[in-house]
Image (cartoon, rainbow, N blue to C red; front, side, top):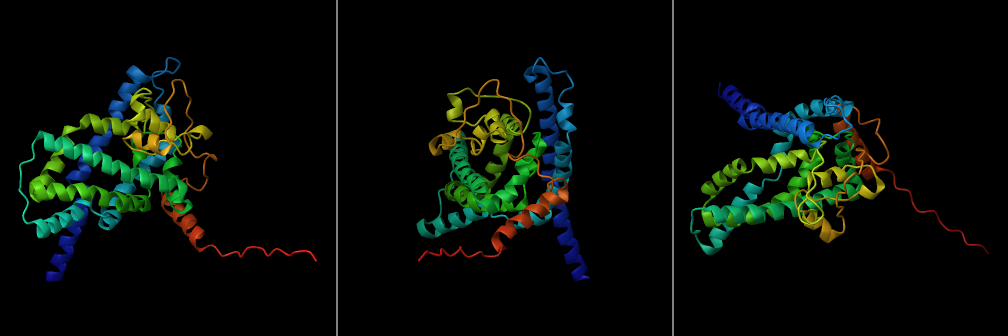
Length: 323
C-alpha cells in the first residue's frame, strides 16, 4: 500500500509539470502572442502588395505545421525529461547565499523596493544575455552543438511557436552556461533580501513585463520591427533576430544576442537591419530532407552529432620524399 501511494504521489508530481498552472499559462500566452502578432501584421505591418489573409500562407506552411506538432511533444519532454536535468540558477543562488551566510553571518533581510527590483532586472538581463551569447555562439561554431541547433534554423517560416523548436541538448547547454552566471546575482539578492521574499519577487516580476514578452515573441514572427540604427547597436530588435535566421551569406552567424546587441557589437557579429531587405529563412544549404518530422528533429541531431565524435580516426597520409 505504501509503495502504491509513493507511485501515485510521483505520478501526480510528474503530471503537474505537464498539465499544471505553469503549462496552462504557457499555452494562454502563446495563443495571445499569435493573435496579437496576426492583428498587428494585418493592420500595420503588412506590405501593400500583400492580400489581407496573407499570413495564412505562413501559418499553414509545412514548416509551421511541424512546429505545432513539435511544441506539443516538446512541452511533455521538458516536463518529464529535460527539467530534472537542467542546472537550476535558483538552486545555485541558494547555495551561494548559504555560503555568504556562513562566511559573513546572516544577511540584512531588506525589503525589496522598486529601485532594487530595477537593479535586479538590469543586472540579470546583462548576465543572462552574456550566457546566452556564449551558448548561442558555441552552437553555431562547434559542429557537435550545431547539429542540435540546426533544427531551430531549419524552420522556413517564423511564428512564436518556432521559438520552441529547440532540442533538449540545446536546453541543457543553455542551463549549464546561463545558470552559474544568473546565480551570481541571485545569491547576492537572496543574501540581502531573504530567499523566500526574493523567490516571490522574481516570480512576481514576470507580471510587470507583458510588453517585454510580446516583443520577445515577435522575434520569431513575420513582423519586421526595427529599432533604428542607433538603438540596434545596444538592443536587439525583432528584425535583427529575423536576420539571424536568414539564409543570405551576409546574414550568417550574426546577431547572436537575445536582448543586448551591444554584445554583438563588441564581438564583431552585429548586423543592423536595413529597410527593404528581403529575408529567406532556413538553412544556408537549403532544406534538410531528414529534418521533416517530430521524431527526426529529436533523433537525427543525436545521430549526426555522435557520428562526429565516434567517427573512425584517419591517420594523416605519409609524405614520401623523392630520392
